[in-house]
Image (cartoon, rainbow, N blue to C red; front, side):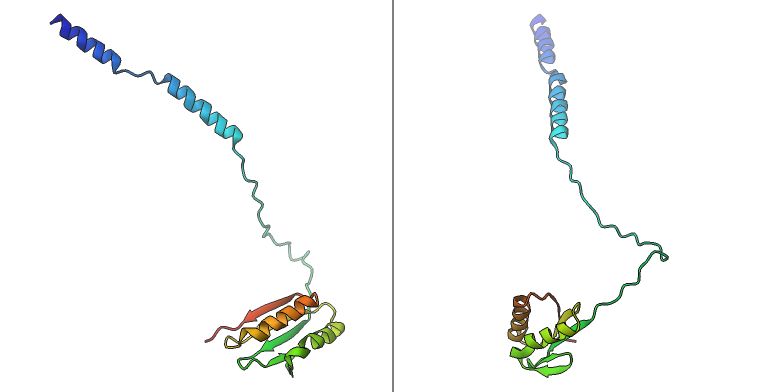
Length: 137
């Protein structure tokens, strides 16, 4: 009977695990990861508007409109133009309106060839433009 008691007491002593070293390691790892972590410095957009007394009136820029319809015919400022003459017409209009924005609109049924050609011609001339393709109803 004395053997059974000593066996049970040893068994209960062996079942205990000291958690202190594990907690020490966890805290050291936590400190390491906090110190080595890089925090993002995110920049946001400022959406606050100035008071209306300080707001400056913004003059809209003039626009030069180019339109490609469903039959791939091109018009510059509501005048029908040949596809190859669009760049020269735009340059002539830019001389009249130096700060103008070039607006290219296309019908949803228009093919991409004239649109890409005009975009390439404007890029070769160093002109930026705004593009919009109308959606079908």
